[in-house]
Length: 314
Ligand code: C5P
Image (cartoon, rainbow, N blue to C red; front, side):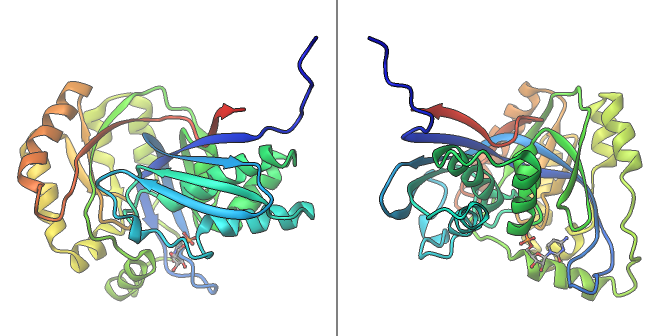
């Protein structure tokens, strides 16, 4: 006798990656307060998993890696996962039902878009759990409402971001790039870093700096050239707010990284390395001195990797 055919699963687990910005060009704020961006995102191999299970009610719970303080993740009903579920349910006229469990490895408020990864994972997992069959276009539209980085978390790979970062176009990237990630135990507020950008650069052009040189470096597949072209307009404001970050960058570069840069709005510092072995050596060198100084862990990750994707479907 064949098993009954069921079209909707009981549990769907989706894995979503952290992102770094290889180029983050920021322009003067728009009338809506957001900053126009020309950015190049890369998804890297550090992931949150989100499992959504069939339920007659709604709940969100969390298990976090030992270097993450679970108290930093708001679970009181206003998590970005709650908002993702609300939006998707409203889009289809469905009730918001499910038990969601997040297994978090992406540092919180770290400039690595961990919250955006969870939102993207929630959209994909709940779409499958509810059998909602949302089109890719609609999913990207819902993602954009949740946050500027969420569409990229769905897409993954390496991509050009424009608008406020939510308009994403996949880029051909044939490289495998090796990164060391040095998160900080104290997160930074993205709006605060943008406000500080406005203070430092009151005459910023409305057109953000182009990513052309970075794109040519990506195509060259040469990590030395890519290192040279890494660019982040939020780095100076981040350094101003957190002067300790400059020393982290200097240490990683002294230990052999090709280049260190603040990731997004910080405070995570990311280091491009020439190879996997170099990355492991730089991570080992950074790990000792940073322990106990507000840098709870040093991680190695390569990119590009896939965006939010189903890893378990029961
Ligand atoms: O879009 P998201 O919710 O991630 O943005 C968080 C905050 O970061 C915004 O409220 C805004 O203050 C700032 N931001 C910005 N310009 C962008 C993206 C974010 O000013 N392009």
